[in-house]
Amino acid sequence: MRCRHLTILSSLRRLFRAETGMAAVEFALILPILVTLWIGGVEVTQGLSVDRRLNNLASAIGDLVSRDKALQYSQIEDIFNIDEGALFPFSATGLSMRVTAVNVDANQKALVRWSRARGTTARPDNENLNTLIDVKLRVANTQIIMAEVFYTYTPAVGYVISGDIALSDRVYFTPRRVNYIPLCDNNGANCKS
Image 1: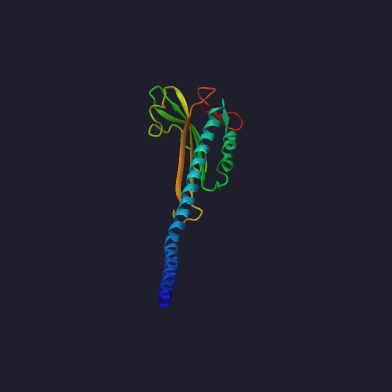
Image 2: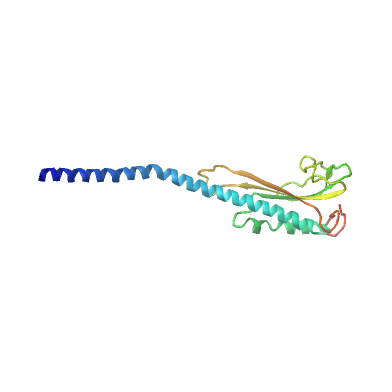
């Protein structure tokens, strides 16, 4: 009976040791997957956060421009200076901004009246933007303020999402206090409305 009891105890010990080893092996197999999912979740969350901040920045630029009765070049530059605060805690390196006043004629043709940009090129005068502005927004004999932002997002870790991702956003506003917002040089002359 004693021999049988010792055999059972030693069998139980071996079983316990085998289960402990199996758990360690399972953990070792699952750990890289869990770490990859965690890092990927962080990278995707940060990318979505930057994209949301870009939308807020484009909205703020368009909103600030559409509130004025007239603008000067220096005022547009001041509006563009909200970039670092709007993207905080992310770097504003790789950010480009553009604001464009688009006049819609009697035939609902959308043409650039004036444009200013930082980090990219301004749109040329009289450029046709019918492809960018939906026909429902093109009300005859009105003006549309179009704010655009472009950003190159580089993931912090770059393990799951590798390489740079080009993000952009575009929003539309109508002037609030006047029908057409003129843009003048810093002396208040040479205005385009």
